[in-house]
Image (cartoon, rainbow over all chains, first blue to last red; front, side, top):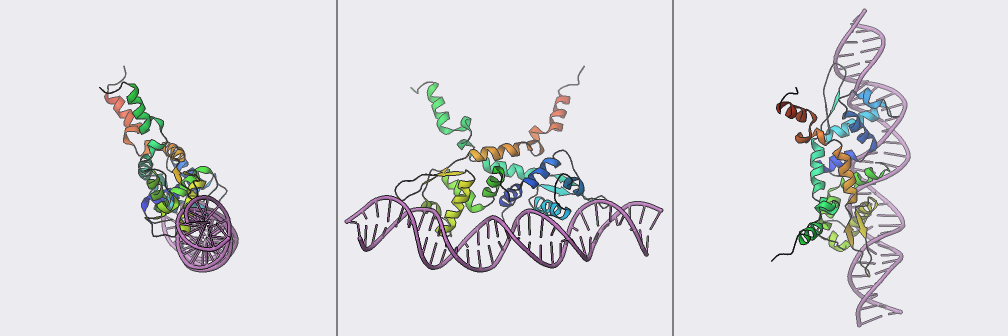
Length: 111
Length: 111
DNA sequence: CGGTTAATTAGCTGATCGGTAAATTACGCG
DNA sequence: CGCGTAATTTACCGATCAGCTAATTAACCG
């Protein structure tokens, strides 16, 4: 894909397994084995997904003995949402410029 | 990446060239040559990017003589935003559960 | 019809991705 | 120390991706 942060974040989200991991971490931190449990994947595969999420800044990792608990870090989601919000007028009818214009017209014509 | 629609949309957004194309189309429809003009890429490369955006449902294409004008279709952005909004509480302080709890406490303890 | 312009398709290449199996690191404990 | 458990790293594979050049299709114009 590319090297800028936003691209890395979107690329990380473009995989159902990684989105499921995020969903799991929304319920609280978890170890790698706990995260891997629901998936029909090997541990190394999960480890790679976690690395992708970490590079995107979407998770952080602690260190407790031999466990490395993962925690959701949602800040990049804010940036991604921010980028998309620039186009919100194109899909949110309540923010459509024409819609707003028509509404202002219906409130009464200018003098 | 994967085959579900959300993955396709995120994958499409995970490229700066494609995001720039979206930004361009926010100013109105454009032909392929117009879209390609600002980039140091060949036309076939742009054509491929447009196909990716089209598969993601982010653009639609008309047909006027030999021109194929592209139009922004932002509906998938709504779905993507919707998915991210599930985790909004993790980055938006005003939506944080603990934050809300503390605020309600400060308004005065229950009887 | 032939010529021009717009855009796509075909075919190739190098890079990256997602997965596995096997080896390795790191820690806790007897 | 040696063993078990957690997790990562390494090495490798097939598939997909992003880019190019060259060839092709499609539509207009004279």
